[in-house]
Image 1 (tube, rainbow, N blue to C red):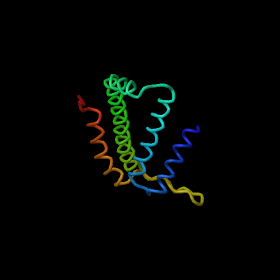
Image 2: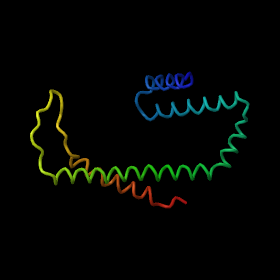
Image 3: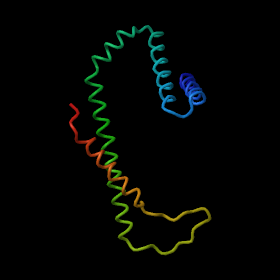
Length: 135
């Protein structure tokens, strides 16, 4: 927990010093990797040995990353299909009877046209994310 607080403190320091930009992400990642490296050195690991081990595990890490990308792309594609299904189903059914709404409550609405138009390129890229050969 203390490590998380230290990294969060470094990140908030970077937010204050650099503003909200990509530099903040870089500072956060450099700080995180520095703390991981420092922890490994303090635990007695040689960073050259760790680098060689990571290099030898490259094929496995690549396979895991590819599988995770295909799973995430599949979920994105399913969500796009779900958005289209819900939009079409909501437009085909008869309008519901008027219901008394409580103050601050909004009626249910189907996905709008902007959401439907955005789902097209998202589904396109998700399809290629699932089906492309990355070798």
